Image (cartoon, rainbow, N blue to C red; front, side, top):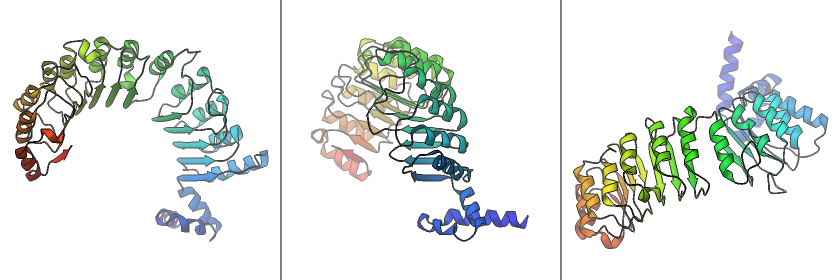
Length: 372
């Protein structure tokens, strides 16, 4: 018992030793070296050639001596499958892996996914050639079938991500949504030319995505209200951020924003920037239901007027941050009225020409941040 307590005390001390000095610890005794390795949770290694069986076996044995390793970064000019297979067989508790070596095969990635079931972050990069042509659609599907805890996946220069040959990203994205078992929290799609209702409806039907916290869509031209309403109902209890930036569905379908506002009661951040045909009545009808809203971005919404700001004051909003730059219909008196009467406002983004002297003094006295 005394030896166990002593070991735990030493490990706690090792955690507090700065990295430059920790290497000396292993030289004291074999016991200290064993304790240091068992207390190590993160390693960053540069692995030079040769990559012969003897070297790979030694590398695997070295990793085995670090049973609680959770984060590993490996860089080197080669290594390929043998290095990754050594990691898969020796690091069962691995959660974060950055493998900056040569291309690896689907087989080694499959082995990694079945052996390291706690992985939540994988980064695979290559130097030459700059593509992932060697990794086909079918070979990649095991990632979302087996790695249930993945929260971050970085792939560079990929052609598609489906289970069969895709001529665009539409099928690949739909395949990912339908088969994914990870609990997606944030989705940000910018200029997704193939995104349509089938993707949004698939998101709403996959229970793993019911905890979605943030949904950001920019320049989506193929979605309509049906898909957004279905998704809004599915994530009503979790969604805190919604961005529909330059999405013409906001202008095409009257009443859409009203329905979304009635569903998304927990919404705290809303970004409707650059919807230049958005009207006061559409926005106000949504904001009436969003009682928790703290941040609102309306940059570039040219048809909004002072009436929107007045309605927000009358509805006793909780706004702390508002962006109304490049809103041609909002004038100096509207900005002044809003700044003076919004009780929780802490930051406002607006053109300098629309700030009256009264509004400036009030903002200064209230320590309000004004961004021009």
